[in-house]
Length: 559
Image (cartoon, rainbow, N blue to C red; front, side):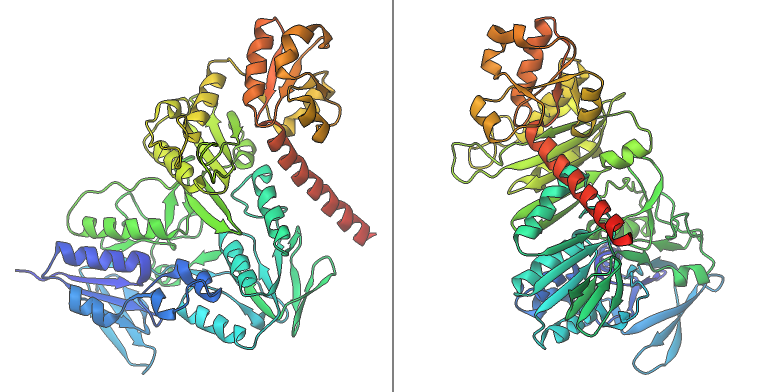
C-alpha cells in the first residue's frame, strides 16, 4: 500500500481541523504539522477574556498539545518550527527549527497552507509600546504589561475585537479610551445600528473618540490626530489583520486581487498539489460573487475539514461567505450577516430596508429584553442581502436564523412562514424573524410603502407631512420636530385635520404606523410608514448629529 505524505503549514482552527480529519480518513498516511508559534491548538477567540480575568486560567485556552495530538491522532506536530520555502517541482518544503536553527527538507504528496493573518501595526512614533492580540505569545506579553498595574488603556480600532478588548479592560478596572478612524464603531453595521453601541460604551465610562487616529504614543500617554492627549499606560491595536502570504508568494502561487491566496472551488491553489485555507485565503462573497478576505474562525474550521475531504478524493462544495459575526459587550449582543445598507447603496443596488424593535420573548414573561433588528432585501428579487441586530438576549439566535435562510435561498417574505421554536421564555408566537418576514411581505405586495429615517428630511422638503400616531402622552415625552400628533385610534374621526398631499406616519417602532398606512390608504390618502418608527429615527438622528459635531470640532481646530 502506498503511504501518503501530507504536510500542513500552520495549526489552530484550519490546520488542525485538516490534520485530524485527514487522519480519520486515512489511518496509514504520514501527517506532519509545522507551526511557527509555540502552540498549535488554542482558543484564540478566548484571548480577550483571559486578559480581562473572565477566563481565569491560562491553561483553559490551550486545547491540545503536540503530545496529545500525537497520542490520539498519530500526528507529527512540530511547534516553533517555520517553513521557509516550498519547492513546487520537487514537492518538498524547507523547514527551520527556530530553537536550534537546524534546517531540514520534508517531502509531501499534498501540502496544505494555513498560515493565517498578521495583526496590522501602524508605523507610529512610540509604536513599540503597542500590543496586539493574535496568539498565546501576544496574550502573555499583554499580561506582563498588565502586571505593573496600569490605570489607563488605549484601544485602537472599534471593530469586533476592539470592543471585546474594551469590555475586558473596563472589567479589569482601567480607564479606557477607544480610538476609531471611521465615523462609527463597528463598521459592518449601519450608523443607526452602531449608535446605541457607542452610547453603551460611553455609559460604561469609555471615552469614545471617533473620526480620529493615533499620531504618537508616549511613555504613558498618546497624542491623537486632533491634537488631544489621552492617558495610555497600556496600548493595544485591534485595527485588523493582513493575510500572511509571503511563503505562497515566494513559491510562485497565485495571489488574488484582495491580496490573499487564490484558490478554486476545491480549495486548490494554482498548484494542483497545494491547498490553502483560513485567514490567508480569499473567499467568494455570497452577495456579490466577488473575492474577499474574511477572517473568521468558523470558516477556518469548516474549510480545514473540507480540504481534508478533497485530498482524500471527495468532491466538496465550498459555500460562499456571508461574514456572519457576533460580539457581546457591556450587556449588549451585536451581530450581523451579509452586506449593510451603506455598502449596497454605494454599489447602486435596488434595495428595501426594514427595521423592527421586538422583545427577546413574550412581554408578559419576566426578563424580556428589547432588541433592534435590521433586514436589507433586494427589491427586485426579495432575496435577503444582509441583517443586523443589537440588543439583549436572543439577537444571536435571530441573526443565525437569517444567515441560515440566506444560505438556503429563503426570501425575505418567506421568513414569515418559518416554523420556529416557541415558548414564552424563549420567543413569541410570532418570532421576531417571522415579524421581519411579515414586514417584508407587506412591502413586496405594496401594502405598506415606507421611507427610511435618512430619507425623511428630503421627503418633508418635497411637501410631505409627518404624522405621529402615538398617544398624546408619548408625543409629549419625545417627538420628531415639526410633526403633528393624531393618535391611531383617532384617525378615522379626525381625518379632516390631515393636510393635503403625502403623509408620512410613524409610531414608536413601526407597527402602529403600518396599521395607520393601511387605514389611510383605504380612506384615499397617499400614506407611507416611517420604517422602524421613532426609535430608528432617533438612533439615526443621534448618529448624524454626532457626525456633525465631530466635523464642526475638526473645522474649529483647523481654524
